[in-house]
Image (tube, rainbow, N blue to C red; front, side, top):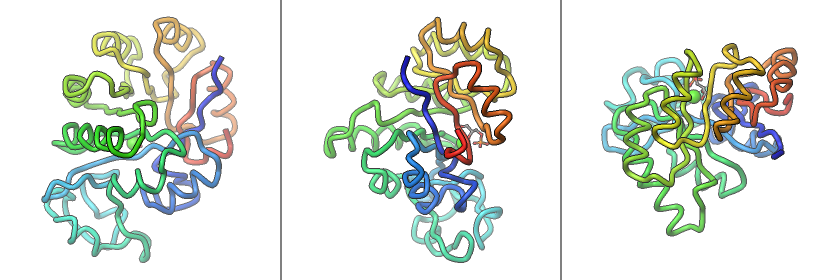
Length: 228
Ligand code: G3P
Ligand code: CA
């Protein structure tokens, strides 16, 4: 059996502001096997790493990410000191040292993300196993798969894992990413027997981590990957 992956949610969010280069560096410092992050497009079509569709909660600005240019977005600060990163900047920081789980959130992200992944593979010696693209929006996953079938897909779900399993089979996904509350040892085993990894989120307490580990999942997405 492969080792269980420790994946740092929005970077090591428990220790540094979420979705910043500092949070991703912290994840690397903690020897995470992967990082998870969220993406939207800016008004001028750059891939922006940000969880919410607005910058209100995490920066000193206000407004929708997709109404600002990259230059404008760089003028806002997270925790009064950090800039909002682009996906390219995160790739360059990580530099193949761990898996990158890109969660598609904003409209238009599938095509831009596929193009960027293909660029890093063809020009910078990365390979498909460095990436997994996930989303709650399964139309975006279908679009990603239509653009490039080699890109590993993670089917995010906060509902019945069986429905996600059926969709995963149709698009030949690599993994199912369920809300960990949905898991049992039986459904984990069923998903794995069908050939998919099980990567639950967001598991943070010692008790929950132990419970999910007992189900023999393939990895855990956590704000504190060092606890896994
Ligand atoms: O990828 C798992 C998890 O990140 C999904 O929820 O809201 O943190 O993006 P959220
Ligand atoms: Ca996410």
